[in-house]
Length: 367
Ligand code: COI
Image 1: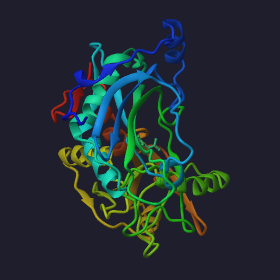
Image 2: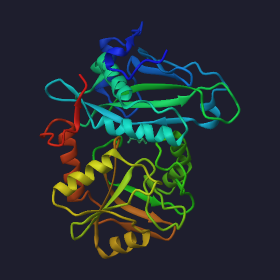
Image 3: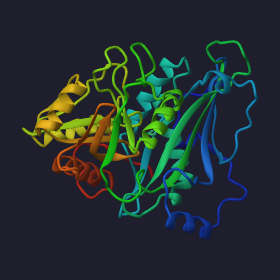
Image 4: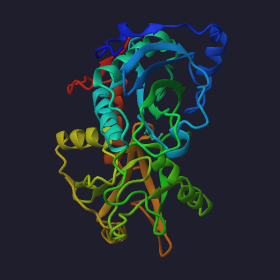
């Protein structure tokens, strides 16, 4: 039967019969990587078109039995979110603006014709999961319990239709920084052969397919000696969109900060909108508008562009030190992390880790 929107208490807990020992957990927490290790449990809610969202539970982390005809395996009915749980010095576990992720999850679901999970259920699932596995939240600097809510279409049917069955899960990974080795500037390849999204497509949805399509360009960029790919719009091939897994910001010499306007082709990043707020409150002028690659190139060459940085939940704020394409290669500024970039990174992470007052009310206590 359908049950109404839930609280964490609505989740029954089916404990993992063989959880990691305290020693095994300590070994993982002592050598943190990004997204490699997972905790003992996962939160889960099932959905059917007839019964709605049912069977809220926290159960052992483990493989999902899936019928080979499950529609996610054929038609990629999948969306996900990424957010982090931070261990504060007072021992509490907090997360950052989870309602924003919950609302974006609904928008992604809508675009992918998947069922829209109530915001309360998204939040309650995270709380229920952290209530059980919060001990996996690391304490090392820049570490977190990276939370990965996701939804898959599990219809057993090869016809193409709106799914009638789906599973929502939250898994968590005790993680170190996304880019290992401290805050190092990354290089970006400006992509002229592939596009990430097109008008009317799924660019604003956080669906696995967008990320799958980014892997070939990413591998080609690696082969050319670049770390990340910057995509241009599919219609004119001139306007900056995003990096595939991160949004992008450009800091001008006069202190103005520009970032690509949301067109429906790029992800509405929670970190992106938080940074716009933080920079504006730091008395910088922030402008969301189309930025052309020619403008960026010329600005970098003339020095009018002082800094470029990328941002996202996983990567936080990452300076860009170099960019290139088939017909150019440029260093951004002096190639080292810029002052605006590093300041906004510090301000943001100070709020997230409880080192500064959260005047925005962005942090939610989970446990
Ligand atoms: C995140 O920043 O959390 C993402 O979901 C991006 C992913 C490529 C790690």
